[in-house]
Image (cartoon, rainbow, N blue to C red; front, top):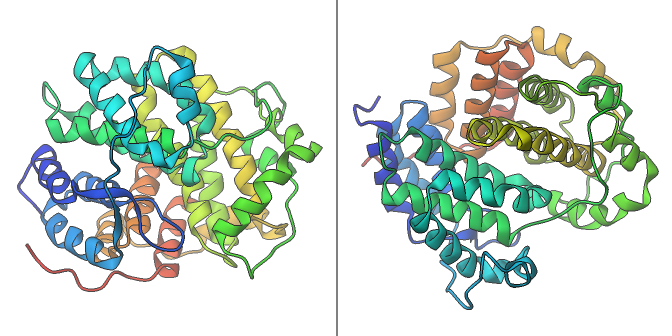
Length: 370
C-alpha cells in the first residue's frame, strides 16, 4: 500500500488524466472513468497502484479530446444556460462556467446553487454526471484547508459532464406512498426482455415509452417517507440483490443503481436539509426507470437476500485486493460502494454482489508499474 496521502495520490492521478476528454471514443461514447477509478484506488489505500492503473486505463480505449470553449454561459441568466443542458457539444462551455464559479465562490456554495438545477437530469449517461461529481466532492471535502487546483478542476468537470449529458425523465416523483423500497421495487412492472439489444439501445428506445405507462407514474409516488440515510441504505441493498438475480444482460445499469445512491450519500452532508428529500425522490425516479428499461419479471428477486447469505464471500481486505487486481473501473467503484454501504448497515447482498459483479466483468490486462 502507498505511503502517500489521499490528497497527494489524487493530485498525481488527476495530473496524469488531465488531457482526457469527457468520453471514450468508442461506438457508445462511454463516460471517462479515469478520475473516478483513481479516486477509488486512493480511498481504498492503494494509491501506489494508480500510476500503473492509469496507464492501463488509457491504453484500453482512446478518449475524445478535451472539448473547446465555444460560447460563454451566464449562470445568472436562465435563458443562457438552460438551453445548453444536455448538449455534449457545450461541455467546454460548461467546464469554463464552473471553473469560473469555483474561483469566485466557495465550492460548497456553487454545489448548492447548481444542485437543484441539475438534479432533474440525474439520469445523465446512466448517472455518471452525479457519480463523477460525488467522487470530486469527496476529494474537495477531504482537503486539509483549501482544495488543490486539480481537485477544484475535477469538481468543475463533474458538474460540467452532468450538465452536458443532462437527461430528464417524465413524471413528478414524491414521497408519501405506503410501500417500503422492497415492495416498491416489486410493484414496478417490467418490459419484456430483449437480449439482442445493448444497454444503450434499450435506454434510447425505452425511455420514450415511460410517459405513456401509468404504472411508471404510479411507481413514482409509491415510496413511503423515511429518513434519507435509511432510504439510501434500502436502495443500495435492494439493488445489490438485484445484481445477483439479473444476469442475462450487461451488469452495468444495475451497478449504477447501487453506485449512484452510494454517491449521493457522499454529497448529502454538504447540502442543506431541504434538498435531501428532493434528491431521494429524484433518485427513486431514476431507479424506477432503470427497473422498467433494463429488468424483466424475475420471481428470484424475492429470494436475493437468501441467495446472498449462501455465497461464500472473502473478507474486506481480500475483496479490496481482488478488485484492485481485477482493475476494471466498474468493479473498483462497485466494490468500494458495497463495502462502504455494508459498513453502515450490514447486509449479505453487498458482499455477495461485489463478488458476483467482479466475476462477470472482464479483467484489465496486467498493469505496468510506475
